[in-house]
Length: 79
Image 1 (cartoon, helix red, strand yellow):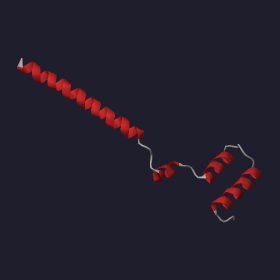
Image 2: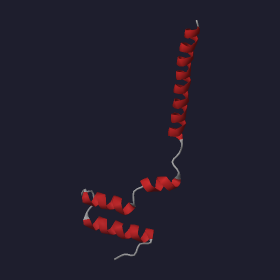
Image 3: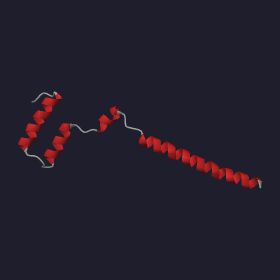
Image 4: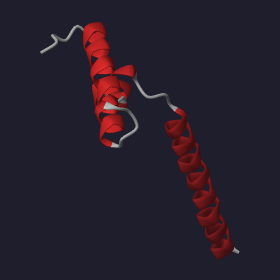
């Protein structure tokens, strides 16, 4: 009878730990990303424009026009 008590406690302990880990993972996954970190994942508009130009999605004239517009909006000097 004494052995059965410890065996039950072992499984009981296992299930409690499993649920605690599950809840920690669930809430950890649901936490929003801080804005400072989110900015690191956002791509630069000029990089997007260069990627589209390299892929052939836009012409050279469109690239130059949009590049000048983006640089004006971002405050970059136009060469």
